[in-house]
Image (cartoon, rainbow, N blue to C red; front, side, top):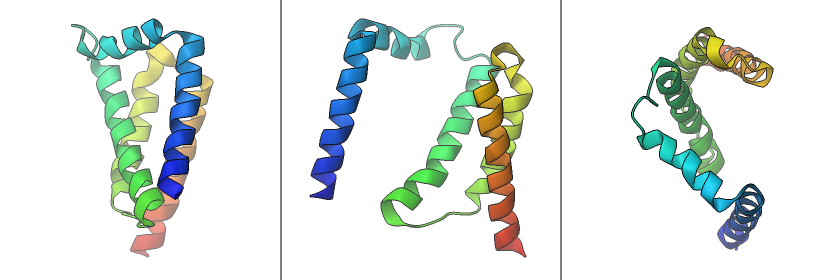
Length: 113
């Protein structure tokens, strides 16, 4: 039952937001991944950081398992993302990745010492 309710919630919210923004705009956004020139240094780092954070979060949410070693990767990618983000120096991105550096530091220290 949890899976059904989660899937319906996900599809309802996503469909509503995509509808309000416009499905064509969303599709255009996703098409950027396949355009020449998109995968510049910043976007590569951003994608790597996103994948690393997903690799930390998903096992915890789905299986209640923490793979603490992945926090070493997220510590590095969060710091790197702040460093290369001079093009998109958004305060929310800087704050989130600063917070993630702190979170990763706590998890790493907790598991090593």
